[in-house]
Amino acid sequence: MADNPAIRKIEINPITRIEGHGKITVNLDEKGEVQSAQFHVTQFRGFEVFTKGRDFREMPVITPRICGICPVSHHLASAKACDMILGVEVTPTAHKLRELMHMGQFVQSHALSFFHLSSPDLLFGFDADPAIRNVAGLVAKFPELAVKGVMLRKFGQELIKTLGGKKVHPWHSIPGGVNRSLKVEERDAFLAQVPAMKETVREALSLIKRYLAEHGEEAKKFATMKTAFLGLVNGGFLELFDGDIRLKGPRGRVIAEFPDWEYLDHIAEHVEPYSYLKFPYYIPLGFPNGSYRVGPLGRVNACDDIDTPEASAELSAFRSLTPDGIVHYTMYTHYARLIEAMYALERMEELLQDPDITGSDLRITSNDLQPEGIGVIEAPRGTLIHHYWVDEKGAMTQANLIVATGHNNYAMNRGVEMVARDYIKGGEVTEGIMNRMEHVIRCYDPCLSCSTHAVGKMPLALELMASDGSLLKKILR
Image (cartoon, rainbow, N blue to C red; front, top):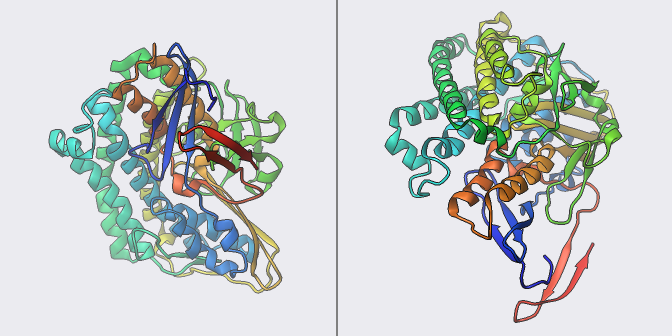
């Protein structure tokens, strides 16, 4: 920050009701107006570095330890990268079992984000007493809704546990396939629960649509910016597990669509000294013009349609909100998240009814190793990329991870500054205003433990401070 003593610094540390550690800083000028605002990711993990030398077959077990919220996403992306190193295509049963676990991850993660992390702001209001604006307050005032949210998340977690042995850090996908089949009685038990889970999502959809209608222009203005959107598609339809990467422009034009293994030809990363989280961007447009958004809002804007009936109908209603069908409203990410939760349940039902899902042909292997492998899936928070390089014996020589939260870094920073400028006037900063800035981050449901990684040289700032707090020297790397 500048040395001008008239400039006031506001810090929100830590940001609450998100996964991981981050903070927001706002700098006010001498008139109390916002000079700048930034979102900082303050934790760092270097999985790319300490996986060097490990056998690539260990990666689907190692990488889920990046995070306790997103282990399934890393597990599956890693397994797909390992398949490419083996040069094999998994069996239909293995593919569908992996996708089934993936749908369980979407259900549990989206339930956590909406019911536990975001709904207290929506149901109590941004300016409500923090003592009640939390999960405990939700349980006290809306017990039925809270229980349904818990049960929806539990349903997804139990599916993960059934296939992978544990709700957190499961072990199911292995290079070339999976290590466990699904029993008929297990399939039937989950199928029987799907209708009730769909009803919970319908109730949540009614809640968010009512909230957005009642708050009208405020909800549409909240941290809203026009950006491009990125996500996987399959024949133009929403795809969460295995498709091509599509980038759609702010007005709905498809800018690029390419196979996932070509990501390095299209996506690069920018670095800023105030955060360990990088800024991915579309190379031809440069940074920041090539910045885009991912996750629920990114995916429902990037695709042409959704190929399950109830989610498709909800998407049509969602797109009818704007003349061109592209929804830039950041607050509407909650709506998009619930559309995806419905899709995940519908797709889960399709998979459970597929005869292949209880098959026993689980794995294909090979001794003819390829020098690299790339696995890309849609994690609940957005597009997740695992890229591994190996030597002739299969030992890891290099890894690159571009994690979902990183793609949204530019949008989160812009959104925080927009809300700060909209609400902070004359230096007056209430708790409710600070909560609004935090809610910008909650809209994107970031997973900060996943988000930082080590490729290239990370920025480093060393500050030498005097005993009175003045800055004596600053060294930048």
